[in-house]
Length: 286
Image 1: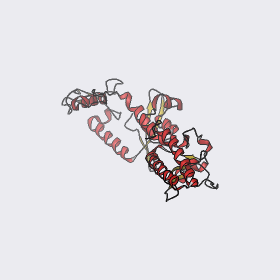
Image 2: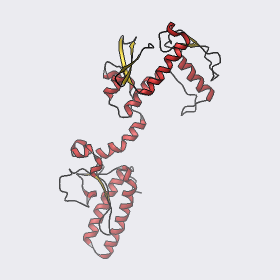
Image 3: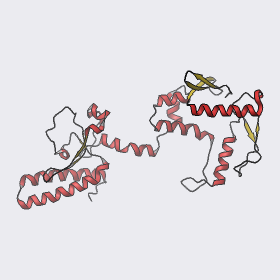
Image 4: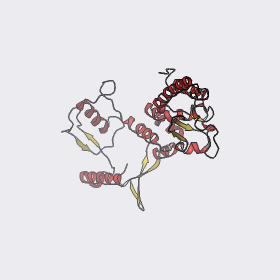
């Protein structure tokens, strides 16, 4: 990367350089913060060698593997090698000196090869379109980015589990095809959210209704028994258990009072909640 890699177009900035590996020219838009960093690096190189060195970065010799201040470090007019780069040596020194450990208690490892795929994976996990990430990386084929540079982490899967479960599981814990839900549910699940408090007869309802917003519901307040449109979610499990227990109590009181209609109403909803609870808790109805 040359010292003149920074290019301004109107109010926008970009870095442009010729890539040896791809034998092409690549450019990446940059923020004003990075513009400041590159400008300072150019000033640093010019102060060292002026026009004698045309590159933005240089190599360093005398890097220490145990002293963070690197007392013998000296800049040299040399292209940074592919292996044994100053970045790798400095970070490994940092790991060793500060005893940075991984999840297994072992000294952490570092290779410059981790930086690019890690950053691209982060961009992908933050919600950036894969095609944009691929273009930003300068890959000619989208498959290169998806196969070798972006990975789906366990953390990402955990974050999406609720949304996936919401879209795929109905009140009986059976598959509910996402495409079967109305388009308004796809674009805004909150519009279908159920959070209906109860009174001495009606039952509090928690979850989502997959019925299109413009269609009439003939099972209102009996949502738990609606096998077609009601969508239960794991995050409401404590509320399902609490509601189920309250319904069983109401059922017993209605039985003692001889109110057969209420007994049937409470029992049907409590039975359905048992199924919902079992689907989220591995069969344990607590």
